[in-house]
Amino acid sequence: MHNIKVDINFAVKSSLKSGLDSIEIDEYKDKANIGYQKLLKLVDKGDIGFPKLVDQALDNITAYAKKKLGKFNDLVVVGIGGSSLGLEAIVNALLPHGYNSLTFSERGGFPRIWIADNVDPYKIQWIMKNCQPSDTLVCVISKSGGTVETVSNFNILYKWLSEEVEKPKDHIIVITDPEKGLLRKWSEENEIDTFFVPKNVGGRFSVFSPVGLVPASLLGLEIDKMIEGAKDFIATNLQQALVLSAIYIFYIEKGYKINVLMPYTSRLSKFADWYCQLWAESLGKRYDKDGKEIFFGTTPLKSVGAIDQHSLLQLFKEGPDDKVFTFIEVLNHDADKKIVSVMDEEVDYLKGKSLGELLNYELYATELALKNANRPSVKIVTDIIDEYRLGYLMMLFMYVVPIVGLYFNINPFDQPGVEEGKNYAYGLLGLRGFEDYIKKFEQGYLKLDEYII
Ligand SMILES: O=P(O)(O)OC[C@H]1O[C@](O)(CO)[C@@H](O)[C@@H]1O
Image (cartoon, rainbow, N blue to C red; front, side, top):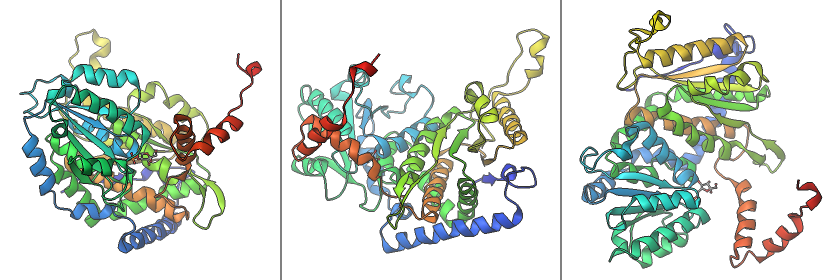
């Protein structure tokens, strides 16, 4: 059973001037319901598949992970965007801080984890310096099978593996589309262990597909619990998604431009990164579904409490009133520590309090300070962080974001805006078929020396 609540007190009229009154709450829940009904139709037609992932059998993944247990000291996941952010969120929330510094036996025979997302030579170099090819499993993830960053990093790692090990194929897993793409073709030709991302599941909605579950299972995490949490959210608490969506729709209509996700725990820092992609790629759209140019979207912003109280809060409270805040509170922080006072009486007030209590008091204080400045906020409260709660929270947001988008009549499941830049890059890199983009690039990328100072 979950213990996750959505608290909207500081977004309603009784406590906030700009909040929703009771009539508006119903009105906006109805609006959210319009988005939700559209989502249901897409799911029923089979166009959108992420909610159905909670019904999949997990045995093939867990059996595979069991087979690999103890055989590798390192797992390198190669992927970017929706093919890495979900896993990063899982690792950050559920593995111990500094996990990679634990010994093999302290890790229970599970591998260390490295995520090769960016094509930053420095990062890849240090992954290769830290790992031994003979002891490394490389898991390459790309829905499209051709993302340039992923393909480049993987090629480098493949060469590194094949120079040292006899059968590099035994050190590789591919996760990709079942039919299309470079990676699919390559994995088939080379008989590589391969898992598939269902065709109707897009990258940023794929954390409950093999994209998130295979590496999580290889790391010893209880993926069945993650799925159980996601499933229970759908079965019992869709109301929470409707209420959250209603609040977001209300403030988007009022012209609020920024959606801040602010967990009060470092363990959900990467969760906030995952959320930013989900929100930005789903909701930032030039055209609506009827082809009308609308330049829709609000900007997601990651913020971590209490860290960003010392960085962003000044702007949040006294800058423009254009942000809606979503806090996440964890009631019981793992391994909570009592603060002992070793200094003089001035810090005595801390004596006997725990770090977790301090974090939560700081959250309450920030909530109130923002409320006093008439800044709207909602709060998601979870009793603890574990596989179940993380699964629940991820599914909650994977519902909220498309509900908002579909209500505003945009397509939350595509990302045409990322294509133009990709095409120029392909042209510059000399990919066949993209020659036109070299010319277009040369015409457009004109910079005058006089403006380079
Ligand atoms: O899984 P793929 O196809 O490599 O794509 C990675 C990411 O690139 C994008 O297509 C564009 O940023 C995202 O939507 C996606 O999550």
